[in-house]
Image 1 (cartoon, rainbow, N blue to C red):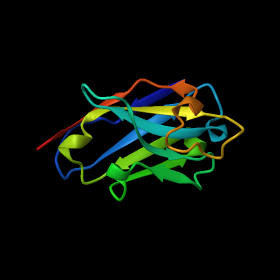
Image 2 (tube, helix red, strand yellow):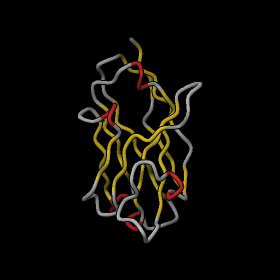
Image 3 (cartoon, rainbow, N blue to C red):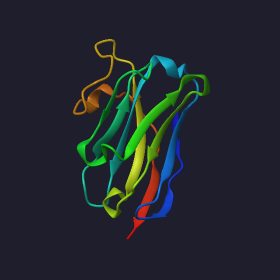
Image 4 (tube, helix red, strand yellow):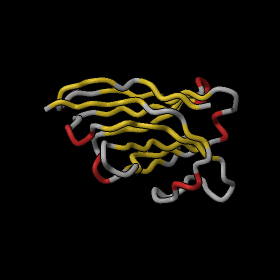
Length: 126
């Protein structure tokens, strides 16, 4: 089971750190991705991290502002979001997968994530 937390209301230019905590399984065996869905828009990829944390991917709109990391001892993946913009407003969800075909799926391969948690709302005011 995955649970995302850490969302909230922040002014543009501010920061938030989201957490994705896993229970019931050994998290180190899973790659993890963050996705977001804004009102009226499709879900989009944000960032992802491999099992060891050695490989990461970022969507172009968040490169240089967001950082994904993980602490396998705590069964938690983080998304540090800096320099937030109003267009970052969305429900952020984390997902995990364990396909043996991938060290980390390419950003478009959403079907490789088999486990999804409930999201956390991030609202960035201008």
